[in-house]
Image 1 (cartoon, rainbow, N blue to C red):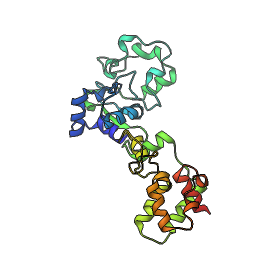
Image 2 (image 1 turned 90 degrees about the horizontal axis):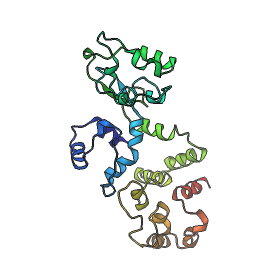
Image 3 (image 1 turned 90 degrees about the vertical axis):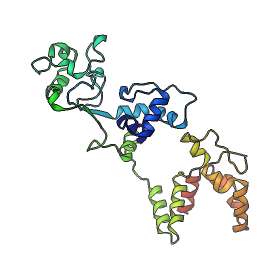
Image 4 (image 1 turned 45 degrees about the vertical axis):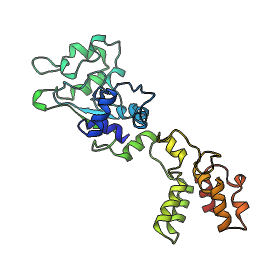
Length: 269
């Protein structure tokens, strides 16, 4: 989502300019359609998150020439005004900018929209100063953070809600970080527990490859558990390290198929 936000808000960055030129994108429109079945992994990933990025966009009113009155979210509400309308909006008005609803005197033209909205919404609009040239340009901000700045943390909270660690998570965390050993191994173990190793399964999920097959044995998907235990190459290493327990360690039925879950259960014993 961070790249999606950059695509929307940093039009002068080189990679954004290249992407816009190659795929004829119009990020400022926000409702653009990504239809590129043969596109790069980047464009496919952007297609996957674009609607979430746009849902997080809020507008700060300046001159009102860029913000669409009905389609863009500028009134500090959860959704655009089009979803608050009491009756159908005249089709020719759907894409009118906010400035079109201000009269020559600089006041809101209630005759154009007041009858289309609930009283509570009209009161919310009345709290805004009408747009004017003196107010500068309209600007976007991220609606899911307190300061309007996009952060990965705020995007994650928006997508999945605030994650409350379970007792299992806390137990695994304590055991890993209390373990006496090199820091890089602790970090590796934590990646295993969270199933964040960049295996082919994870790379395919991120659209970085088209195949999730293990490149060493070719017998299955390269998941975390396959990489560390089920691959024949990994099994050979375990047999050399733990010859008496190799059979038990390499038993699929003992831990199942999830590498992170298997590691967490091991820590709790």
